[in-house]
Figure 1 (tube, protein in one colour):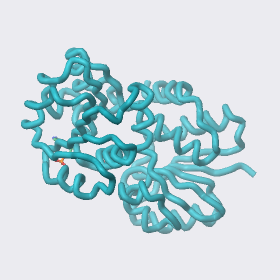
Figure 2 (cartoon, protein in one colour):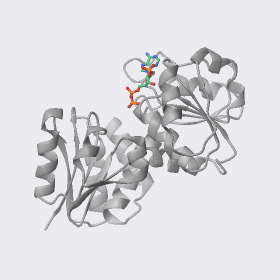
Figure 3 (cartoon, helix red, strand yellow):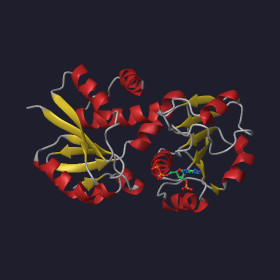
Length: 275
Ligand code: ATR
């Protein structure tokens, strides 16, 4: 019987996950289909019960359900639990088990670009859900120095306080960060600043950026934010948000099927979707 997969969210119409996963199922000759399901917050509990009852094999979870879903699952893995958000659910012998592949997806993507991350000094801009997933995953992976900067510096402080993994971190004001930017080997932009249609904004000036820094932005629309353009002008290597999106999807696909999928193939599908 055809296996069933899905992504649940609200809104869900623009999700690129169905095209990406259905292409992979076809490519690897797996008899399965991946649906986009529009689930409103007030329907989340019923929706999860329904998906379990019909024997769904796995699903992704997106805005606004990543946090609330935790209490509705049978089990949640420890990294996802500490992040406090689940983006991937696997049906393991009838039990719905939650994982977070956002942070680990980001990490896999950056590992493909850079060798020996562990000795690098990292700066994360932002302190929302995405920053939390990336920060905890990097700390869990043994990266020793990760500072956080955010408009609301208290949120960065909370993230540092909540992090269960051994890491050296400071919470910084944005203007303070601009002055000491030269210290960082890796700068990760996780806020929504610069996302289409408001492309003309950057979270902070890159005037003092280290020449050979690695700068990444988790935004993929536009493919090159003004922030990344500025970084490139300063001589940095850059990475856009396609990497995190594709890698989180690849890790989810691997959890569901045991296959680590062709990343270039996934990237091409996403680029085609973006037009
Ligand atoms: P996500 O889950 O995608 O990370 P989020 O939890 O809403 O989204 O977090 C958004 C992040 O973008 C936060 O770090 C937010 O800063 P605040 O904590 O100060 O709100 C940041 N952000 C969004 N719009 C911003 C803006 N106009 N200027 C500065 N920071 C902004």
